[in-house]
Each structure stands twice: as C-alpha cells, then as structure tokens.
Image (cartoon, rainbow, N blue to C red; front, side, top):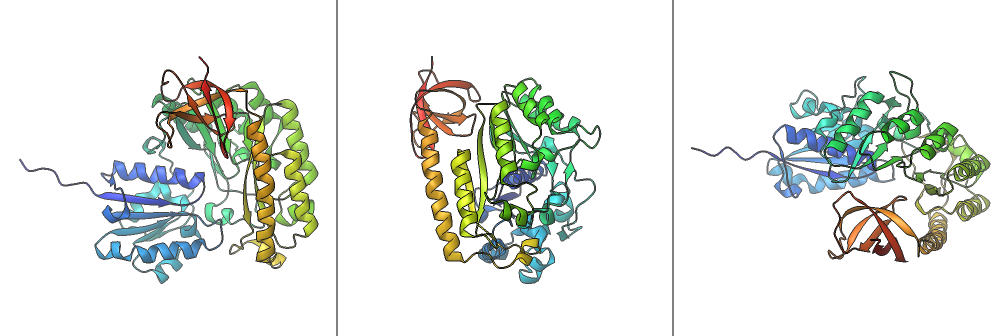
Length: 436
C-alpha cells in the first residue's frame, strides 16, 4: 500500500503588535485545517507569509528587503504572500515592485484566506462587512493563555497613527461570540484570557449595546478564568463603570497598559489624543483610589513635530509622578497619509535620540525601584513552565506582567497560580521561592 503524500508546508514571519500575533495564530489554524504542516524555517516551506507591521518608520523597506531575500525560495517553487498592515498600506505597489509575490492580503481579510490561496484575489485589502472570525480554528501557541480579539480597527484618528488606515474603522464582535470563544479556550486548558483591540475599551456589542465594562464582567464570570487581561486601552475610554468592573472581579488583573504618548498638553493636543496632561493624571488618580494595588505601563513618543525642551521635560516629570512599571518608547515616525505630516518636520534626529536616551535612563531607575519594592512580598504567579535560562527553576508571570523565576519543592501543573515569596530583583524580572 502506498504512503500518502507529504502535506504542504507553511512558514509565517510575524512583526508587530499582539493583534498581528493573533492574526498569525488565525492564519496558522486555517492553514492546518487545509492540510498544511508548519515548517521550521522558510527554507522548508511551500508557502511563506510575511505578516507585517507598519507602525514604525521604514517598515516598507524592511518588508521589501525581506522579499528580496526570499527570491531564492520563489525560484525553488515556494509561494509568497504579504499580509498585515504594510500589505494594507501598500497594496498593488507591492506587486509593482516585487511581481514575484503571489498575493497581498490586509488584516481585514484574514478570514478570507481561501480567496488568495485559490487565486480568486491577488490583492485583498478591502474591509468586508463580515470580518469572518473563525475562533475554533485559532492555533494558540501558549498552553496557559488565550488572546481574544473583541474589537478591530480604531476611530480615534490620532494624528501620528496609521492604524485607522491599516486596520479600518472600529468593528466590535458580538458579546455572545466572545463569551463562546473564551469558554472554548478554557475547555482546552487555558486559564488566562487576554482581550485585544487597538482601542479595547471602546468596545460596544453590536447586538445588545453592552459596553466594555459589561464584557469584562461577563468574561470574568466564565468558569475557569483564573486571570483576565486586556489591551490596549485608550485613556479617553476609561470610565467609572470599567474601573468598578475591575474592582468587583478579583480575577481581573490589577494592571493596565494606558498609553500617554506625551506629558505635554500642547503636544497631546497636536496628537489629537482627546485628553490633556491633567485629565490623564486624574484618570490615574481615580483608578488608584478605586484599586490601590493597580499598576500601569505606557507608550511614549519623543520628537513629535513641535516638541520643545519644555514639552519633553513635562514628559519626564509625568513619568516621575505616575511611576509606570514599564514603558514602550520610540522616536516619532512619519507615516504616510497621517495628519501629523501637516504639522511640520519632526524634531532633529540627533536631539530626539538624546531625549529618548534620557527617557530610558529615567525609566530604568523607576523600573529598578519598582522591582526592588517587591522584595519580601508574596506574589501570585501563573506558572508557565521551566525558566528558559535554567530548566531547574520554575517560571511564570505576576499579575502586572513581570517574569518571576522561582524555586519550588514540587513542580506545579502548568497554569497553576503559585504564591511566591520574592527574594530579589534582576534587571527586568523577579526571583523567589514558592510558599508551601
């Protein structure tokens, strides 16, 4: 009896945010259902997908450089597809510059993979009314955590941001579908749920008009959800009802990623962030009053057009005042089609670099002091497996997303919450011993 032929193979290279990571999980699951097998590298793949990000400057150059490198794979017969936000941004221009690419597919078309695989569309960058979200087919890489998209796109139109172009306008998923996906993820052994959206707390159920606070409470009550996270939140969408839902449900993490972008009200106005410095600080104060143990992380842009020395000093002082546990900070990047291009030239690159370095130096001190403050505390840690650096040591995440490495007498089951007595801190992690 002859053996069946080997299945076709695929390889996906992913750049960018959690939404891109989840799109890759969706693509991987769909390909598996269609008989494909994951390859260990592009050298062994029949289908190569580049899932791209366009948030930072030079993302297009990075993509075309990678496509040039992949020409050898094309010569041996592999198919190449460009997906993600650069695909949405560039569209037909990708084929004009790299005609050997087989198809281009934007984020709104992930649910329509067959259209490009079967040749019905070579460029798929429209935003269908039905986003077609097959959550049962998602190929989730983590044994303990499931990411769940609740809203796609963004209506905020910040002047620096290309997301409304690459991800489209806000489209929320029905709450019943989200709850069904969460229950399914829990049934497969996951115990932590992370709700995702470009502006996650702008969620409104299209069927019932339930808002983000209703959804938080609903997901938190699903049996088996040990931890519930969400990102990314917009400060203007933080409401007392949202904070009350967090306070009322102990399994919702006392942690929020709340991008401020700048500490200067004048810069925030030019960014069209819909809040000023004082409003942001009042939101932080309100959340800390309601949930004293809550911790924050944030995003910061330096060198935005018109940012003065005083504007930058206000950003530093805001970091000192709020004391974020961690930050993601970048120099401003000009993105095609964004309104900030009309605001003038960005700050000189050398000055922007110097400002960014000063910001990182300040945050390194704050982060170090934050981690040292854990010494002597007992912290619940979601055990994920052995440490990558030392298999004899257990490792997991704290509620506010720090890696915690710890010794334990009996190895717990993956996905177990373990109380860890913190002994000390390293540069970006904690270490300790499990409490018996």
